[in-house]
Length: 480
Ligand SMILES: [Zn+2]
Image (cartoon, rainbow, N blue to C red; front, top):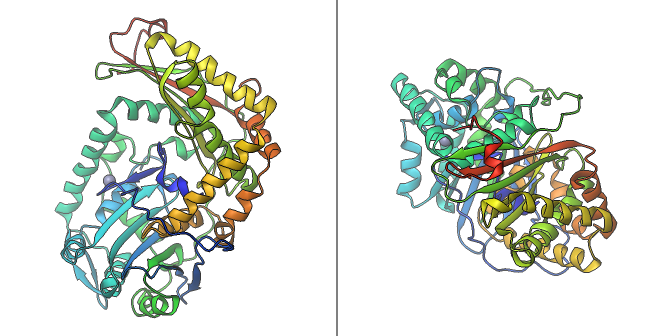
């Protein structure tokens, strides 16, 4: 599950102010007999705030990450984008009698002035905020974060200017990017009766109408200690963090009890969808994408583990079956990737993304991808492939363990989407138990091109505007 945080091609997280920095892992091996990945410790304050601490004493720094169980998929109809808008407003000022008052942008300025980093991101199932600082400043960060959990107070003019900021963010990230537009259309087709089909950033027409009342409604309901998870990783201990949290977050009263979220999910099978074909003048190189809807870890933990191993066997860069077949042997694609995302409250997704060597080979490319998947479904992986994949996954977990904010990110994202801390900690043991048969079973059930028993995948093809191949002609209307 660790690598899910740093999704190559994630459809369900929208990082904001800064892109999450990746690739900062340092090599530092766990003891060979360690049973748990993180050896995390936990506690809960009287007001319901859940606390997780991961100790790492190599350098005197720490990351505090606060996760709220509220995401874009929990928005009300017609208010798409409000959860992300609220995330932006959280940086625009707050006042709290006991914990202090801070003007627009002040929190981030304080973080920068002490040489720290901060960030926030919104997903379909969560909203999270973090700061990485030296340990001496951690309590101050907790105090300011606690103050804005219950003291949000944004000047009117900041609300309207921030509304323009999110609309501009949508223009830049989606409306001006053909790939993002295609991804949005594929996602909408894959989740026609589920909020995951609505983009996290929202639909532009609805975003323009979002206001303070909309944001405040969500804030008051969900930004409460009993709907939050505080994860701190770094040079700290649980007793220290509980003491600091008691002095800061502990001053906040619990909010109303929040029932477990249930999104409207239709039981009606989703009909197969024609490929979505998009032509765009800014496109130089065509793109093929296919997105599957399959169980996430909360829905089916055993299948999710097998799918993680399958992801590695099919999609490992340079050595995965898809790369070997499509790029090296058949030379149909310049590149191909496969990912599976399991940290979701409802259904997870798996996606294939390929750059065809030319627009004329798209049909052959699709058929060849199917051939790889069919072979996996019919014959399964080899024992060696499964062993190697498990070894690589476990090595990745060791690196993740030793990064500064990695553990907070992994634990937060998986717990907030319904995986228990015990299940996260025992992941190495569980992934080691995945068998050849388990992997073949999930390939047969979810990726077999001849027998799709779950929800049919949705394909998208992005083509240059002036392309004249037959795929392009299928859609004379175009979607620009
Ligand atoms: Zn944003």
